[in-house]
Length: 405
Image (cartoon, rainbow, N blue to C red; front, side, top):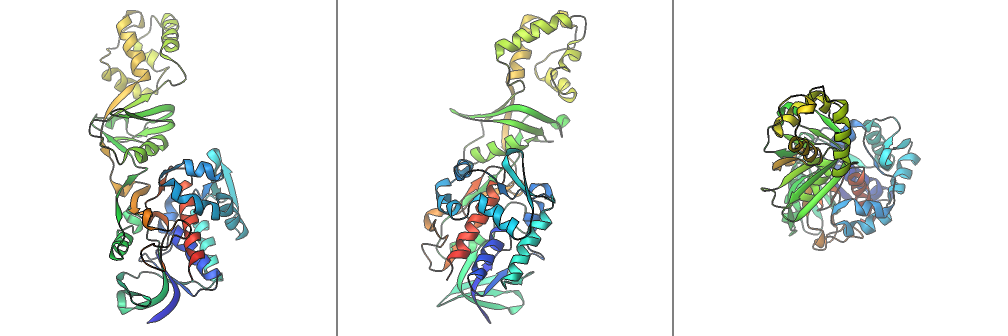
């Protein structure tokens, strides 16, 4: 049996950060992961570019956290987005800030982020144990971790940084939840967050079609959720930044009767759009309505659009007032019936996890078990896209690593 001051279970973003600060403070530290390499999910984030954080205020970060933002106040103040940038820059990783204050490595390679973290771990003497399954954990005076190959480790402080359930291909599992429950913690039911939305309508012909500068709205009873920006059709529904954001806001609601609407012309009111069509119909009077609609919509959307509002192709001059009104209404409120959110496995992050009411927000230590800590996605905290979720990982990882004794 090997003895360490600190053992971190999980070699993702928060786990690596926790191990670095635990070791930097003089603790003998071991990190255990069942994958063959560290940072497996980190490697694919931001389409392989790794959106490190968002170079904005703490208030902006809190406003972009969907679940339990108040819990993150201490963590973000202890290790801010600017601290994250400084940490990576001071350790040799050049960064750049792009549209929406999104921060990326200057190389556009997530592997460089992982390399920087591994170099820090090596510098501070963190021991790394990969390809090792956790079989049992128990506590008497110390924590004992029994692993595959009959390896056993003991430690004074244990940090759980196992992530959520998203992207099972990266090794995501419910291990962290099981450990938490074993020590008496409540788990808020995990749910998909930042995931595509499936619709009941057949949109397979639109698969891969992107729409920019549109409003996407979901109505659920008396509640309405709306986002402006870019989205894309999939074989079964819709995805893209604004869809993903709304999915995180509705994943705890009953959506069986929900409807989605796309405002294809958000810059124009119904009245202005009517004026535009009246003006342009005169210019296109001798042409087919299909040809005219191609000036308003992507070509791939035109036929689907016409079919949806039962509009047959004919000369613009022959379009009735009722048909013109149908076109205008559909441009402003292109509707779909929602079927469900996509599988939790394809969500960018997992909503739910260890109940934060049982976690000290200033240290990430369990309120139930001394010297037991939780950080990163295993906690019931999730945010919108733009680097906000990784900042949660860095900040909570820092808190846990810095607090262990």
